[in-house]
Amino acid sequence: MRWDVSSPNMGSCGHICASWRRLLVLFFRLVFLVPAGLPVHSQGDSQTDGKVMDNITVKQGETVFLRCAQGGDIVTRTAWLNRSSILYAGEDKWSVDPRVSLVTFNQDEFTIKIEDVDVTDEGLYVCAVQTSRRSRTTSVHIIVQVSPIIFILSKDILVNEGSNVTLMCQASGKPEPSLSWKLLSPSGDLASEDEYLDIPGISRHKAGTYQCTAINDVGSDVQTVEITVNYAPSVSEGRDVGVALGQRGVLECQVDAVPEAQFEWYRDDRRVFDNLNGMQIENIGQLSKLTFLNVTEADYGNYTCMAINKLGSSITSFVLYEIIEPTSSTLLQGPGAVQDGNNGSQETRVHTVTCLLLAVIYQFLLWF
Ligand SMILES: *[C@@H]1O[C@H](CO)[C@@H](O)[C@H](O)[C@H]1NC(C)=O
Ligand SMILES: *[C@@H]1O[C@H](CO)[C@@H](O)[C@H](O)[C@H]1NC(C)=O
Ligand SMILES: *[C@@H]1O[C@H](CO)[C@@H](O)[C@H](O)[C@H]1NC(C)=O
Ligand SMILES: *[C@@H]1O[C@H](CO)[C@@H](O)[C@H](O)[C@H]1NC(C)=O
Ligand SMILES: *[C@@H]1O[C@H](CO)[C@@H](O)[C@H](O)[C@H]1NC(C)=O
Ligand SMILES: *[C@@H]1O[C@H](CO)[C@@H](O)[C@H](O)[C@H]1NC(C)=O
Image 1 (cartoon, rainbow, N blue to C red):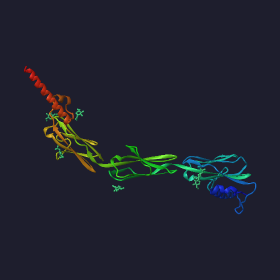
Image 2: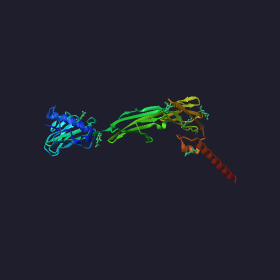
Image 3: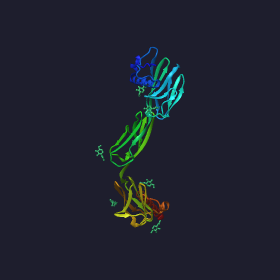
Image 4: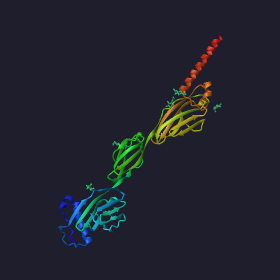
């Protein structure tokens, strides 16, 4: 038995064919027991064709079918090979891989399938057919694509304002995924178009949720990192408050701070405590309220709110001053109303002036 392996057009199909042919010789020697020493040379009526099929591109985990046309001739020998190993020789399974199985085997077609394809399966597969007249090979390249998976990602971080921050994101996948960073909230802006995101001298406005996206032809992976930026408190300026004797008065102190600030209240230099001397202190998140349940003469004065966190503190002062209660509006306002100094005292003055004016006119009219 002799096998033609050297064909005149071998140069045109390059190394793959050449090495494949060497393989094929080995294979057929093994299968058909050609003595190794026997010279292999061409014979007039026998030919070998090498056909290269289009590449097959599959996603990792999918099933791939390897189809080989038998040409309708009387096939004497046929086999599917993965590199140097025989997967199937005719109907006989040589591969021990349970993912490989026979689909069709007849005069026209020889098809096997590989289930749950992985990246290691990528490569050249060859179907070798020997008919009574010729031997023929069909080779096909399997390309396995893998959806991206982010495998390195910066941890959530907590930094002080002004720090230099670098986030990193790395992903695997085939083809090589492209990476990008964006700030999800509040802005949604694209922050970087590669695996690194540099934020020099971070400000409080750059705090938020950052998203890394890894994307390729077959899929994407998305992960997020939280950046918390700490900064010292800043309290908004206090507004003086005028309250009538016996009324309820409230001083409100609003702060902006991360982490959340602790509040302290002072009357001049003395600390003011909750539920002492008719005062209550209530802290709701970023707001602290100092409430006078029933303002007395001694309550009028200068109050200071101090907000403190580990990065610093901030103060603001308020003056609680007396206003003369307008008799008519007392009923309307009643206890519980927070009175605004300027507004209240102006109203009072206008009201008093109007009353006086009416009284004078009335007196004047009575004279006549
Ligand atoms: C098939 O894939 C191989 C390896 O990636 C490549 O070298 C070759 O050009 C591809 N052939 C076709 C026809 O796409
Ligand atoms: C093909 O050969 C490669 C390398 O030996 C191996 O890793 C892979 O599992 C084989 N695939 C099949 C389907 O036989
Ligand atoms: C941040 O980086 C700049 C230059 O890139 C450097 O001058 C500065 O000292 C760094 N700041 C901190 C807090 O590391
Ligand atoms: C406020 O205090 C005064 C004097 O102690 C008292 O007469 C008045 O009833 C109090 N008012 C309220 C609303 O508690
Ligand atoms: C109130 O007290 C603060 C702190 O002691 C001081 O800076 C501020 O000038 C005072 N305000 C008034 C109106 O006296
Ligand atoms: C006066 O009070 C009214 C409501 O009572 C408020 O709408 C207005 O803004 C206040 N004016 C000033 C100058 O605070």
